[in-house]
Image (cartoon, rainbow, N blue to C red; front, side):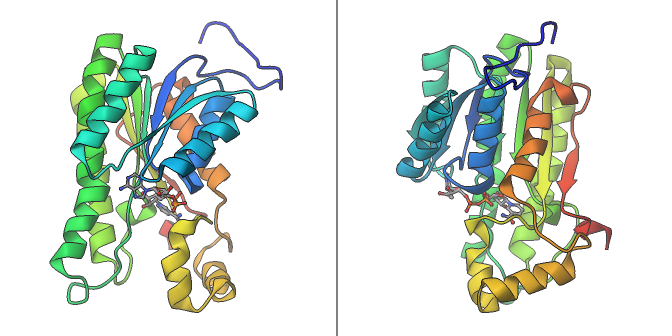
Length: 265
Ligand SMILES: NC(=O)c1ccc[n+]([C@@H]2O[C@H](COP(=O)([O-])OP(=O)(O)OC[C@H]3O[C@@H](n4cnc5c(N)ncnc54)[C@H](O)[C@@H]3O)[C@@H](O)[C@H]2O)c1
């Protein structure tokens, strides 16, 4: 960055006018990422399986003075991802940041999870990121660079009991991010994996139900996490902003873990 631009609220516009596509932007970390990127100057394409929630994210951004548009995209459908990237290029002429975020958790051991659960984990946690990045990279090459942030998990750098589908697919996507980073570094395209631990979002609702409620889950988190709490979506979004912006300009192919020390155990 050469000039320091600040918005009316005094926030430095470190990604001023950069166009950012976010998948799974209708809730949790994806929404918080869309909001923080917008607050720092980016133009957001908020996409989600659920159009209403993607629209809500865009509305929140616009009502806070930011710029955002929304579009429905189920990342399991290649055609939907093609439409998402095509729409972005048609509307804005460029694509500077891809935060490929949507994912799935199918729990179980080798004997508990059926092949469909494994396929779903692979499809959403690996293949969809592959397709999204594959569609994005030609535009970033043409522009002379860009930043791709792929949401993995700390389950991509450590193992979780009874989570074969999740841990396997999250390890695979960390490897894939590193491979894309290596292959496209010469094009000034940086690719990093965002690896959160426990984050307080609806993503954990099935596990909460399994544990018997929120109080039980909070006890579990307090016991399991060295920092004795889970993260807010906003804390993880700070790391997404770092990876998406020039603040991480010499960093590529890395798995950035934000987990309150869980993977140190
Ligand atoms: N919350 C956590 O504790 C945690 C921890 C580590 C990693 N993650 C990762 O973060 C992601 C989930 O994010 P969150 O915690 O913000 O969850 P969330 O449930 O708050 O939001 C997920 C969003 O993704 C959307 N979505 C689901 N399937 C989709 C699809 N096929 N296409 C497009 N959008 C889809 C949902 O509609 C929802 O808006 C996953 O990749 C998950 O592995 C979450």
